[in-house]
Length: 224
Image 1: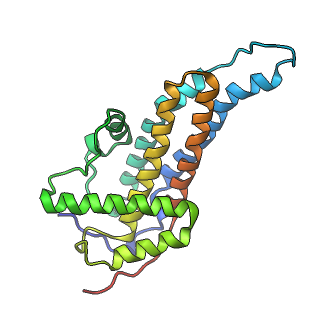
Image 2: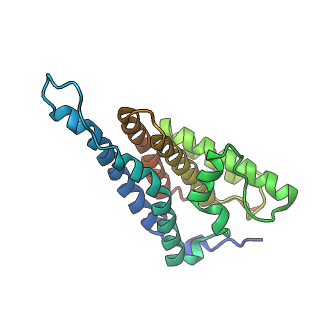
């Protein structure tokens, strides 16, 4: 069973997630730059030129390297702030690269670890709730915060199973994985323009992950 660190002794979330946030920001720039290698030559070509040569390699490279970049950053954050890791992250199952591979194979991404039937069900409920938080945050952050408050105050989860930080961390994961899976599609795109569009389509999800990784709600857990 995991233990909950004393929140008063923890640094702000943007500090605890600093390496991940920096890597996400770097990835946003790489996605835009990769798309530019497709669009810029077309913009620079003379109006009467029919065929324009573009470089698709950057789109492929950013797609291949993104998950590893973020996994390394997360590992560095965990090493810098070990007290803030409230649940064990199994390297084989918690890495973005592994979870992308599972999703690409069409399998269900289930919670990791020997949780037992009740624990698995609670973890899957929490993951689903975190997806809702990420989806609401994009359109109405106040609604997302209200949902986190409901989860924290709910009796559906045990004392160690839900903290606002954990809900937000799972929401970060959901946003990141959505962006990474979008980037994976760029590798198999039928034409350069589609690959560039997919690189750009991944950016809003990655930017949302930055926002969620920085969010500091400061909610108070009720006494039970």
